[in-house]
Amino acid sequence: MNIILFGPPGAGKGTQAERLVSERSMIQLSTGDMLRAEIAASSELGIQAKKVMDAGELVSDNIMIRMIELRMSTDEAKAGVILDGFPRTVNQAEALDEMLSNNGVAIDHVVEICVNEDALFDRIATRASQSEKVRDDDNADVLKQRLKVYRDNTAPVLPFYRDKGILSQVDGMLSISEVAEKISEVLDS
Ligand code: AMP
Image 1 (cartoon, rainbow, N blue to C red):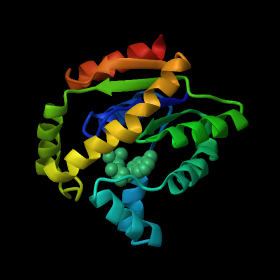
Image 2 (image 1 turned 30 degrees about the vertical axis):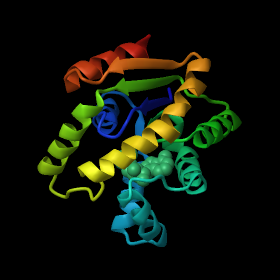
Image 3 (image 1 turned 60 degrees about the vertical axis):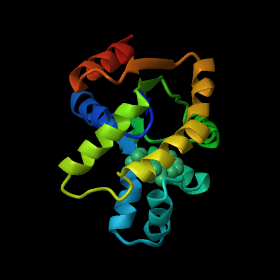
Image 4 (image 1 turned 180 degrees about the vertical axis):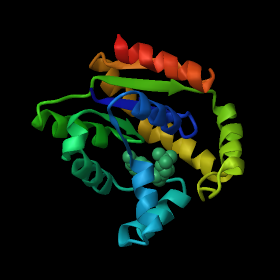
């Protein structure tokens, strides 16, 4: 099974993806984590991406599509993936569709984790205060921009999946374990 966890920054996609990894034999593909690994390795891509990420903008579609294409072609990905943070544009969604159909597979479920925007500012502040290494993009100013980018570029991906009949919504304001339960219900439906 291949699924996408969808939602604005701070919605809990990463947390829920990690739970699914330990509960089901699927791997998590988080493009944000991949980019942070590039930054940690001080690669050319990491250096370029950091500027874009710190500004709350999106890394280019070409780079992101190539990055996901490489991971999707591995044997472990064939058992099923949880995409977290990808696709973030309609272009990325279309490229993903093509990539999967070339391999004879498809996305089975897109789960939108719905949250109240005001709560996101509190969550990001909490995440920043609890992490050992604070993300440079986890602050109120950058979050404002990330939310704008979400509304302008990422939310328009939702109709693409709604039209395919594979979009479900869960209430992301519930507790972590309640959200996990709702996601499991969708995946088992
Ligand atoms: P995340 O950890 O998913 O919140 O991603 C952190 C940042 O990485 C985002 O704000 C973007 O700058 C960049 N990023 C992650 N995934 C993508 C993507 N699919 N397309 C473009 N930029 C991305």
